Image 1 (tube, rainbow, N blue to C red):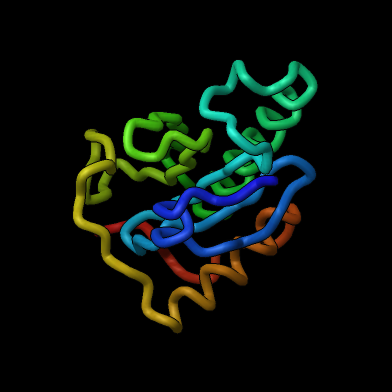
Image 2 (tube, rainbow, N blue to C red; image 1 turned 60 degrees about the vertical axis):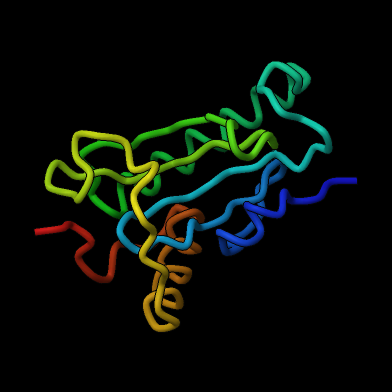
Length: 144
């Protein structure tokens, strides 16, 4: 039976589920940052998925990337699967801007800035619409 790694459960908020994966928002309001986790128990590497599940996971990842790029008007989408601290297979999808706090370096290692309840509610609504192929960004996420 699938269970979410405790670190992912602690550091993220559920956004919704795709046919294979669960989609979660990283609790860091500095970056629109989604994490996609296939709901397959015991998988730590992409190659451990069946070929059919690999294709489905990559389709879901591509959809997430395309939609958050569109909605948040990204300069770049970073997609990463490190797994050094959380072995459960998961892909990070991070919206990046040329003027964000970490550019051009990775976002990993920066202290997180947790969402306020108000901003989290707006972000969840925006993401739910975006991942259905609808909506647009209701406020500007680009850092000045």
